[in-house]
Length: 264
Image (tube, rainbow, N blue to C red; front, side, top):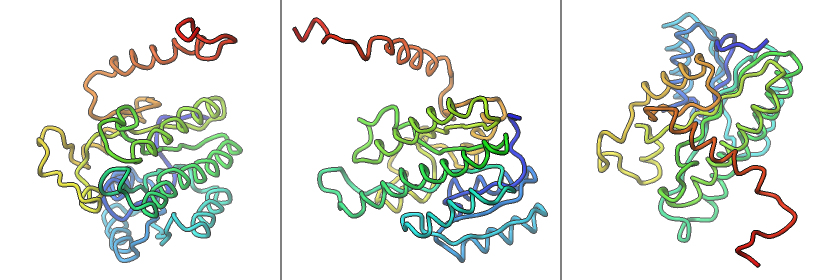
């Protein structure tokens, strides 16, 4: 049975800091037990102890690097077999310093593994398990750069466009199977990801940057409102609805038997 309430036990990736840690805290405040996944064992342990003490929830820590095939596969198996996990927050992600042409290919590959392959495999496993049970929720963290990739250098925007497309397709496939799928498209959010990629949020106008607590609270509220896509910064969702309507209106004309007249 589909529900607009996040409940049960949530597995959160990228949970040691930033958006993931904030999701963990806000979900714990709502009474959800947690499985926290990240590479930083010390941070995970500290967060787990704090959340258990503050909210009385059960918190498990899983140290994993999701760019490593074996560790990703182990977490995938956990989602397939652990029926207590009712919510997946696919949050782990990274960006790469600089533009695309001069980027380190190994770093770009790692970003694709973390931003694209990991949420693909984990959401696939969660979808299979949750659909079989007839309930669950999958939340995928994309970004507004999925809609405006020209405004963000490098391949990061392309990875987030993939997450957006995957989320929309998955939501359609699971619509009648009791599983809610939500895509979250934050704008600039104050987290460590920018420091790690060499960007300086302090150099940007403050009105462009949302505090992480506000962003996550808006995302959770969007889920509770039944939104399939949540854009925390967008004042009027009618703007996105108009964009989406125009996109879908092209559908019947995107695949035809003859080239358009302008190509003749």
